[in-house]
Length: 232
Image 1 (tube, one colour):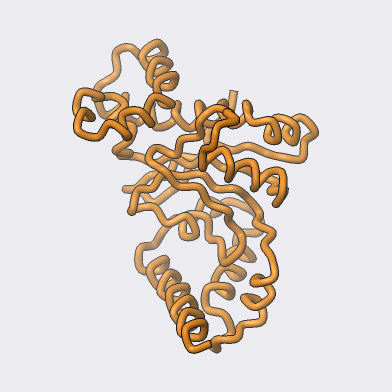
Image 2: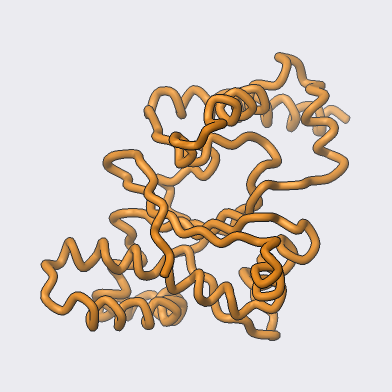
């Protein structure tokens, strides 16, 4: 019991610290333009801080189950804080993070991203999936300069899922300067991973019925702002 109590106190303290960091960094929320952004921020703050005790009723209720609002797929980059980007609190995001915010096309072989997508869509029935890339993404830089990946073969193999996006950028924008090409790949990769998501049976089924919405975002690390990409 002592261990559980200590963990709970640490958890609440960590959430309070996250809110403090959010304010200090002046992070621009993705939902800043949403009509209910004030309510979103208030709910997120309340869930981070709790009621000042180690027995917040909201957190205790969440221990019995979860009902997240969205599956949020983003990069493992340490400069990204999903809850800060989205102004969300405890229990609102179901998160997948990996190098390059990649979603491999559907395959029945054991694979962590596919299993998590399947659970989120089929079991938790999330109404929205967001794929969120970001500026200055090292994975996208690696996809553009694969010769530098010889020492990290697992990274090189994983980035094969970015190759369709890289080829698309080369065909659509053949004369870009290196920095602009990097940014265009970040954007095109988000679109490619959304395309890959549609190969997953549960995603295809629930988007067809209108029960699941797919969105593509790019977070700007310098401006601390999020853009929602137009989808074709």
